[in-house]
Length: 140
Image (cartoon, rainbow, N blue to C red):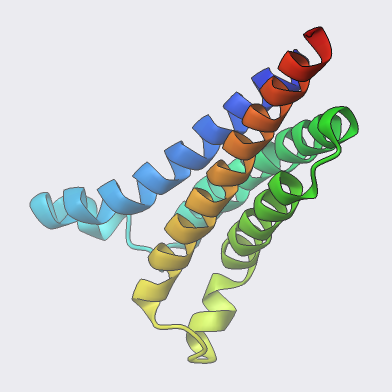
C-alpha cells in the first residue's frame, strides 16, 4: 500500500513541476514585474525549483517503482518512469549547458521538462494499475 501512495505522490510532484513550467511563463507575460523576478536564466529560480523538487522526485519515484516492480514484476512501468526521470534530471541539472551549447533552444527547457514530467507520471500511473491488477489476481 505504501508503494501506491508513493506513486501517487510522485505523480503529484511531476504535475506540480509541469504546472510550474506551463503557468510561470503565462503569469510572467501577464505581470511584467514578475517576468524580471522569475526569468529562467535566474540561477536562484533554477536551483529553488528544478533541482529542489528533483531532490524529492528521485527518491520517492525510485522507491515506488522498485516496490511496485517487486510486487507485480512488470518492467514497462519502471522503464517508462525511469525515462521520465532521466529527462527531468537531465533538464534540471544540465539545462544551462544544453542551451549555451545550442543543443536545445531556450524554450526547449520547458518543453522537455513538461514532456519528462508527463512520461514520469504515466510510468507511475502504469505502476499503480499493475499493482491493482496484481492484487485483484492474487485475491481471487
